[in-house]
Image (cartoon, rainbow, N blue to C red):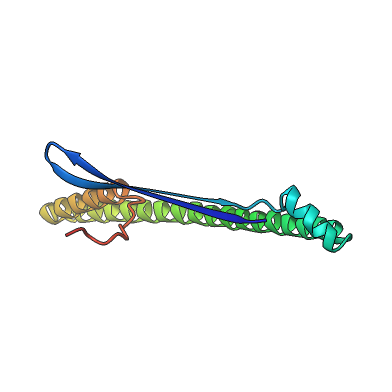
Length: 146
């Protein structure tokens, strides 16, 4: 059955620039579903039908783990497809805003508003550059280090 072992070692370290401490932490978790043979023989002495019960429980546990992993993978696939759709919609929206801004700049240029048209077109190009360069920039959730 599941067994957990933890080993912690500590040592004092002396170097040319001072003293320090070194620690090693090793933790292992054995999640084997079946008990080892000595445990099985002891259990069989207590109840002869225990081996079949252990086999049944192991099969149920394995089936539930497989089911859990399948559901988790299904959720990840759905999440990835939703992010893909959101990315496409974001890019299409940015492209539509850019086209509308350039069209409005052209409209202003036709009506002899050269300075306003130039400023609006420059702003639209800056928006486009910012939108596409910072596409998928994730905000850090880490706390800033002091």
